[in-house]
Image (tube, rainbow, N blue to C red):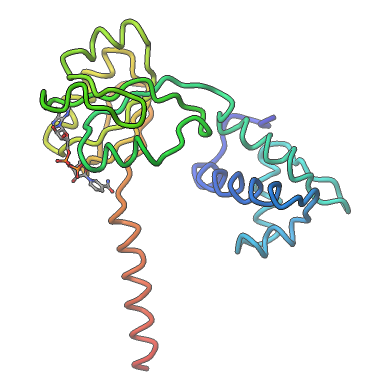
Length: 216
Ligand code: NAI
């Protein structure tokens, strides 16, 4: 159980990684792990791990380490993986289809309920088991299905207008891939802007540093 609601963003950002590592350990049949062992596997310091997990009330027992399955379940619960947030995806182009096919929404607390695209030629085409609907149907769909999360895979230029409309239709959270840093002026709306290219730039920076070290 979280000790308080004010968990820092950096801790929250590390939780999915804990969740993933603990899931792998659980699959390998590991029952208990010390913060030292976990830190070695995750390339974090043991004190960082203890500090992070203390934000949620500990979980560990001095001398016994952490119980892998329970810790994973607790972190999963904090992350909301045991929820089933109805989710829609807007923009069924190359990226949208790839996300719809390859992200396991179900294991991440979301149920992909609908896929929409403005291109009428895509209407009725299926992605996995979901038929693409025309964007004209979004309003009615939202009234019936009450989706709360929207995945945006549309061109930059359309993003803000679509997002504003979706907020009016009840969307609370955006997973935004559209190369546009979405900002929503309403309270109680969450945005996660994703730029895969930023991750690549972090790598090019580090690669660049390697080159400099070799020159020295
Ligand atoms: P795409 O052209 O294959 O697909 C875009 C789809 O959005 C099309 O099917 C189009 O009909 C639809 N669309 C356009 N306006 C719409 C609207 N108002 N409502 C609903 N659907 C609409 O493009 P792709 O490759 O799938 O990329 C989509 C976006 O994602 C682009 O803006 C691209 O720059 C961005 N992107 C972002 C990445 C990231 O890391 N954040 C990585 C790759 C692409």
